[in-house]
Length: 353
Image (cartoon, rainbow, N blue to C red; front, side, top):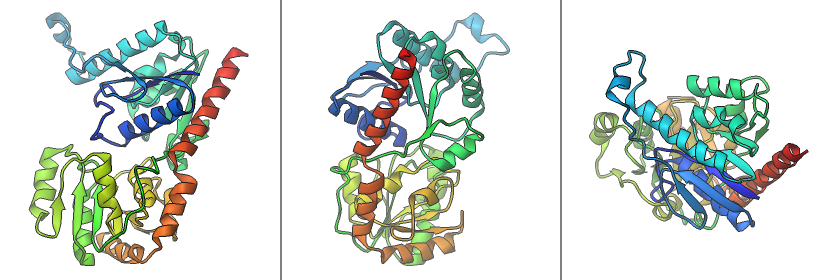
């Protein structure tokens, strides 16, 4: 098949990745290409074995007259709209067999009727007002998109029977290889309030273990207020690292700590940790209970740092081989791509019929 993937207009799908959505796009595109499909990714930038169509930069500025409109949206919102609109117009003129929306933006979904190819959309987040509105309208259109959720928990957040299928995210098991473990703990992800790395630091202190944090700083004010004052010899921020470096640190940790302060739609860092053989201690929010069982991790009530410290101690004694086996059985990139391939083929066949 000729597959178009619509990625984010804000962040390039390159190393080091801005977040899990960009990682997912790159891994899925690479796996589909390896399975013999032609893949074109519409993204803010990046490279890979697949073809990349660069989207317009998110820097569109309207005319002075338009900006004087009292109902004018914020400049960033308008600019992002402009970038996605250009991408969807290009896709409408292309000859793809299927269009996969892998972005958290309303416009690709409401463009489903103007694109000849059938559309599949993956819901990577809980409902947001703009996205919820777009999908509600798109589902009533002549050719509604087929909707995938990354977890059952996220599907429930969208309510009713909106989601057609659940496909868990997968990771490259060759890159995220088993590591030797160690005494310390690791936290990876976006350093932002909803990810709450400061609570991971507090739990690690209570557990008496050093902690390393890796990831991009998305909120400078939060980072300066909550993370920087907590840094010391046993609490290190190691920066925004590429996948190979992340895998090395995760593989050398006794436990990976995951601290969502929102309803986590999936939690790619869990799958990555398990692939390295590293058990997980996490707050029980969103999809985390769907990914972690007693063989591979421990869950703590949301926001309970004391319970999370106990979860770190409990997870540290779990078998690393069981963690790796779980990743191989449930979260491989190859299995994920096969599910998407089957979905795309089914959607294309229905459209042809």
